[in-house]
Length: 260
Ligand code: URA
Image (cartoon, rainbow, N blue to C red; front, side, top):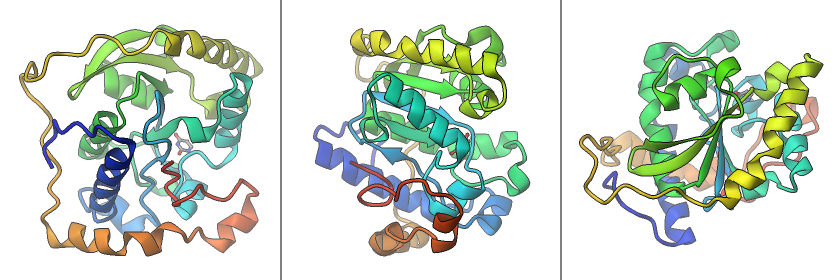
């Protein structure tokens, strides 16, 4: 699968995403994360989404269920989406890391680097117009700059990620707003600007072949990835009953990844 492939139809996009998912499920680039994770949290939502959110890394609930943002921060995300008449089914939600860092520690630079290619593939396949980075980790990664979220939140900019030009829109991480009413108010104000940003449509795209250094393609020809692809449908529909009892978030969407 070439990194510059353009998945023209929703079905093609979805199928290509499933291939990347299979690769992610077999991924052992971060030995500690691969050894300690319960699931790879690939991302969920609409494969044709105009709006993509990128958080930090799965927490315990996400690691159990294989779906991002299903804990308390996720409920706040759902609520804020509802306030601008959007649902999780309309957007795509992913993270900088696909595996839970043990003890919810911060992602390590090497882990962020290892997982970056997966994120770029998702962006290339989903082709979102707006990418909303939630908090510092995703904002710093996708901007390639250490400027923090406190300075940048609420300020959209056009960036090229892989082969796609997108409108990047950094906002505070919902987890940070859970306990700080003022931050929640700021997050809500920044969220309220999303519809007008989406209405601008996609920024002009770089001409094909304009990239000096396109991201390398993820290889599908290693046996572990191929095996994961074969077993993917069975793994997809099995959220842990224990975690479902712990937290009453809605059941994962149609094919577990919530790929609509
Ligand atoms: N859940 C996620 O999936 N990502 C975060 O960044 C926080 C909670």
